Length: 176
Image (cartoon, rainbow, N blue to C red):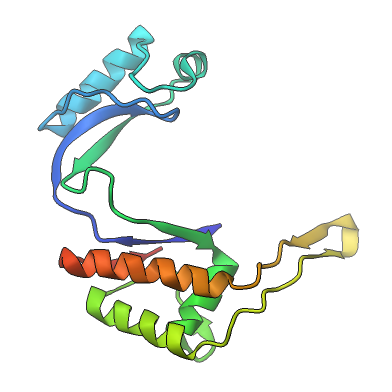
């Protein structure tokens, strides 16, 4: 499981047919229903979309979908981190209440940027966490992959870029 930090969605300018192997049709539909019809037509015809990296897999498994195209043109920053690391980062940002952290939320970009800058200034250098395995009753093994030294500072730096990008476009920062 993971948490992604991202700016609120930009206005939608149209819809296009895409696939799960990087294929994207260049035709843009103003109406989502038209794009859905084009998706079914492409899938039933076994059409390979431009940019598809696995034509045989896509045509045999039906990995087509309709995606919304926004004014960001897929250039909006996104930072995806594991749930356990997200808890630590959200705690550094001051989002822990009574020892609990909500992994879904949103915040104005200016406030978020302030929280990130405060965390960068006040948080001690991240020493990391070593990886380990623990055997449980019944034969299950739990593997904790750890965290490299400096990870929190790296993520906070990337979150600062996201906050700046969002602030410049008057967008809310979201995470879920």
